[in-house]
Image 1 (tube, rainbow, N blue to C red):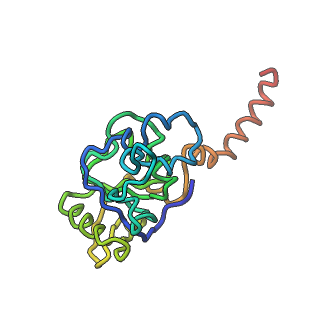
Image 2 (cartoon, rainbow, N blue to C red):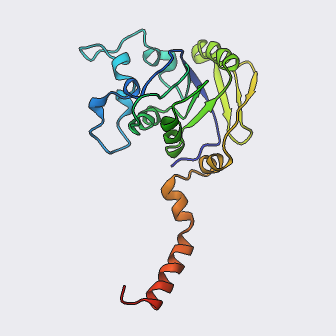
Image 3 (spheres, rainbow, N blue to C red):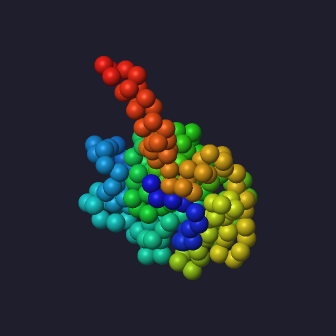
Length: 201
């Protein structure tokens, strides 16, 4: 998993509330167990018409937002089913951070496991950042995980809370496997002891 320290990039405004995981990645794309390749189908039913052509009005299809790294979203983002493909699709598109007033619990947890930082801020702060994101390619936000701040393009700064353990994992690029591998010397030592004490196992 890639480390998350500080990112500065274009933020896309998506003010819809209750964006569920089926909207993020529709069910027909859940057949794969690979984490790559899902970005093209992110928000598929909003991005494309029935003939597969891009919908010009959708924010991520607009030239200013094709390189979006941060999403400023409406309340209750990631609700619905627990599909882990939702953060996979966001990450594959290039989005490393989602800012909202609230998230569905399972989606929120899955984000951390996949290197995406979900930030919860008060409505007033999200409103400011949403308006800033509407400025397009001329507006670049900065998310600083170490200092736990989000800065708008004009320098307004907002502090966010994060669990210290999750912060440690993101800063060091540690998913569940990475956390286990940190204990590799202790695991190897245990296995050696067990091999000597119980060679028949």
